[in-house]
Image 1 (spheres, protein in one colour):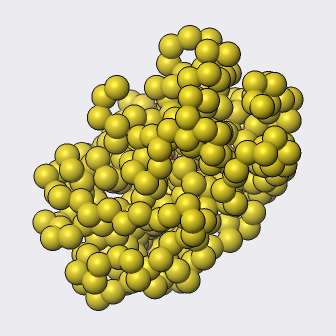
Image 2 (cartoon, rainbow, N blue to C red; image 1 turned 120 degrees about the vertical axis):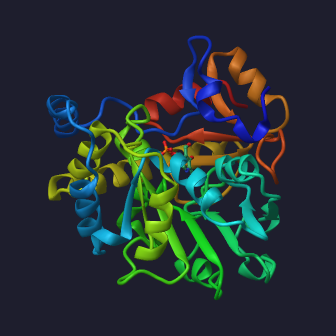
Length: 335
Ligand SMILES: Cc1ncc(COP(=O)(O)O)c(C=O)c1O
């Protein structure tokens, strides 16, 4: 395996014809209106991309000002920008969580301090566990891979003068009403940056589209770190298309669908006597026991191994919430 921090779910399904429960992207093709927007954007690839309209659309979508939005090539690009934004003295990553922010900070030459949320506390966020001198804190909400949705107030309690708090909300669209989101905080919150991604909810990992929201000075600073034109014409078209009323209505429907699929998966795992972490993400962290990941793989089912996440080990796997008939194919191989 390469660097465990750079191991992601897509690697689990790269080789072989496996049932993919490792990658948490909404299954199936993107909606027709999004496909149309992506196709139409081809007519404009003769010009360099201009993010202004997409950023204005995202700003309006969250009730923010355009100057508070920076379009990014997926949330992943934002981690690199944040890592290079300042000479961080004490960057802290709250784990277990998506490991890219940690990897990006190390790549930029920083020593990362980790704060571990514990299974015995339901992987809850304890703002008091973060060292007072932390000048950057990265937390996921809802968190990948635990699925835990932290109360917005707990995230707000991380704020301190001179500290930047980054909330990765890549999976927030899957939460009904986006409860606990901080993306729409009116006027922006000093010292807070929220990351959003189109990848998961709209099933477009190949488009590389996302954006971040923060006070104009921070958004500006991050823009200066960005490679010019790094967000493609298609990605910008996708951002704009996902901010319409039609998209908003479909996003809510998808959130309800995912919530139903998750509830079904949780109930089935419960019935099988498997420990499940309560949460609100479109996947489930389950304690299936060591060796289960490999056994499922041999049976043609890919789930996400969790021993690469700081704070977890090989007794855990992350399972994508899928339609009941797909979940049935997993359950056939569980005790
Ligand atoms: C929690 C989380 N944040 C961000 C990302 C990156 O998303 P994007 O495709 O927008 O770069 C992922 C992808 O797996 C993720 O799980």
